[in-house]
Amino acid sequence: MNIIRMVSVLSVLALLTGCVNREPYDYTSLIESKPRSILVLPPVNNTVEVEAPYIYLSTITQPLAERGYYVFPVTLIDNLMKQNGLPTPEDMHSVALNKIDEIIGADSVLYVTIDEWGQKYQVTASVSTVDVKMKLVDVKTGVVLWEGNSRAQKSSGDGGGGLLGAMIGAIVTQMMSEVVDHTPTLARQVNRDALYNATNGLLTGPYVKKTKDL
Image (cartoon, rainbow, N blue to C red; front, top):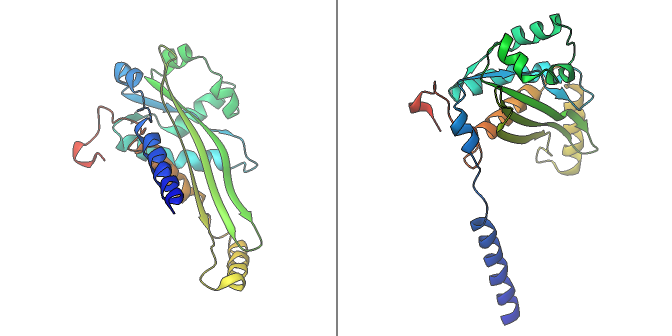
């Protein structure tokens, strides 16, 4: 009994020690740079869902603006890049920062990578997943100002009906997949989770309304 109690105490202490030793996020570069504007490039898409980058783009402007930054119109930037011989997000991500500074005048660029997007069907559930990584870079220096990542899921669950209920829920979700697309909602959740994270979220910019800051 004493051994069990000792093991439990040691486990709790190890957990507490891990929490105490966690390094705080280093915001030094972001604070020194003080970016006022952000140019968001279409995300690099590591999934088979070809529409994912542009669905995601439709969800990112609002949360960045709410954090207090001017966000260049994403559609305008996408069209500008394509008109200048850069048809894919990979091509756009390769543009030299000094060219972005010279032509557009943005303070920073947000590079996004989509690692998971869409629905997967299992025997007892249908799971929608969105997983993205973000990197904010200073246009003039190339220094990484902030990095974040987040993953969100929505499952059909079992509906409280056990195995049979779970199977029915998965079938219904699959049948309705063309009508109900959860990825835009999950993308908005991912953005808020990354940008507003209390531990390593993006610091507020110069245009934030302080009364709404979280």
